[in-house]
Image (cartoon, rainbow, N blue to C red; front, side, top):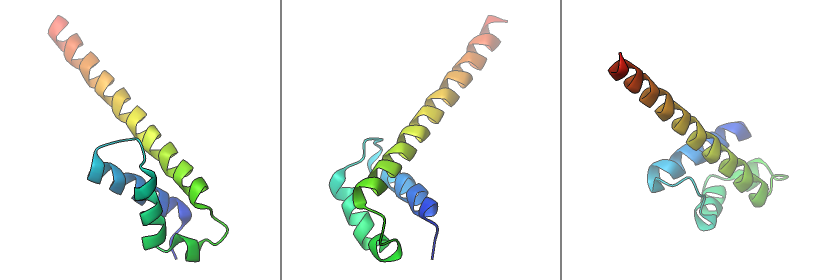
Length: 82
């Protein structure tokens, strides 16, 4: 059995790859939750809580990507200014 955190990361990465969006779709996450057997593997885990955790991961990934983009732009600007 995989850890719940593995399912969260996998769901967030898969969702972003499939949709390119960081706003989680309720139908998509419900299908994921059912198809990957999370209800059986983690009976105390609710779909709503799982969706919130996946959304949090998507948001965190988006913020990290924006931060990396800003750093790269700063490096480019600094190299041009010199």
